[in-house]
Length: 448
Image (tube, rainbow, N blue to C red):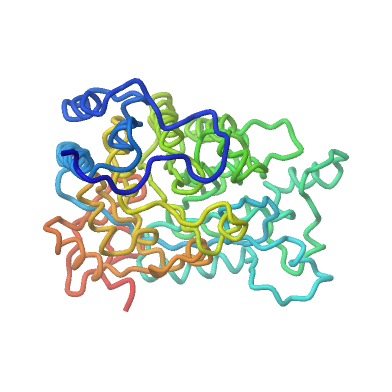
């Protein structure tokens, strides 16, 4: 008798997508290829993500076989270390009018106008405030500052870009002069310069933000990222990827750049010498065929650039998002879907060395479980995490090295501090342990 099936691999919601979770491959063939280390196709990935597309639901025995293959591959590729980074999240502003249906981080930019009541929950930080925040965290031992922000209408790349925006007669630029707002966010260059304190690694400017930083011009993405690198940018977060299939993006984020633009921005960042990360946000309206095609596009991007340091699966947090409020979804991904997403990412992305398990998305217990499904990185200390929290996330906003050491050792693995690019590594040690790789780190606990 076939094993009882759990979960579901049917299209989510009532969307007439062209791509369906179907293939002409067979699960057993796809699993054999995965075990043998052969390069997987999109059809293979669909079979592994669905544990067989011929029937709905997830087969528990087949799922375990996929997880075992991924964990074996993880041991072959990276061994038993679990890496973490000492970092700070400094999101500059929640002002954004893009209207993504999966997001509850943003606040309507109109609320930030100087002539509007200042009674909204959002925030905008000046460059001086960003510098103060990073300076304080640097003294505590962080290695990296991550900054991902809303698309504030007053943001421009630099003074030259602002001059273009101020005189442009083009429609739809989403620009308004800083004087219109209670708080001036400055320019992207000013914010990067402010955060580039004493050698801290600055990880910022997603492809979506890069598009905002060139709007109204004919500048290439290389121009944007080269200017930001001169200002102190060290690497680029590959967020805003969501699902790299336009029929899904047209539903969940129609005002965002399309798949081709996201890929072009990532290639441009790599072209000017910046490392990048990559992500997928899954568990909303997409299906397994979309997830498989997303993985293919990330693998191809890595083949062209070699710049991707890690892949980060991000499970959709649904409760306080427009998708849920509008009745378009009633849940996020199931736990078996999370396990399979991590596992198939490890098996499919044969040219991306590191796969992250996000404790912010998955929590401690399940996040640790995913470290046995193919993941080898357990994210960072964060110190602040507004985006997931505002969407209804439940798993906290910071993490100490003592927590990391206890959690990782509890599953028989070795906790290792890493740099953003994974090129520097240091065993987590001390009593209590603290970071050692940051410019001012000396092993003192980051969080008391």
